[in-house]
Image (cartoon, rainbow, N blue to C red):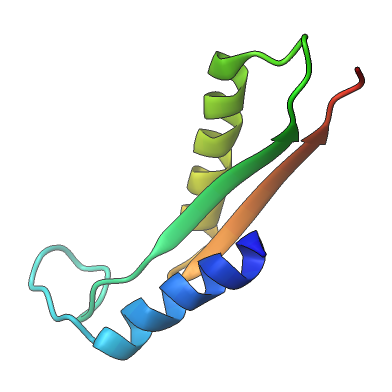
Amino acid sequence: MFIKFAQAIIEQWQNAKDEHDKGKAGKYVTCSIGFHLEQVSKTSDKTTMVKNADKALYLAKEQGRNCFVQSNIIAES
């Protein structure tokens, strides 16, 4: 579900072809998405969840334009 959602967002940005003249990244606005999924338990930590999502975002940016990275953790209860 989340993968299809991320793909749909990226596809919409690609199809929009919104131009920008800032930087050297390219002619059009692009989209990088990083998200984190975790089965929440009593030991889950909000700060760690946000950090994992942030890491996923930066990995997506490193991989190039119009892509996403998903981070998963199955926490033990």
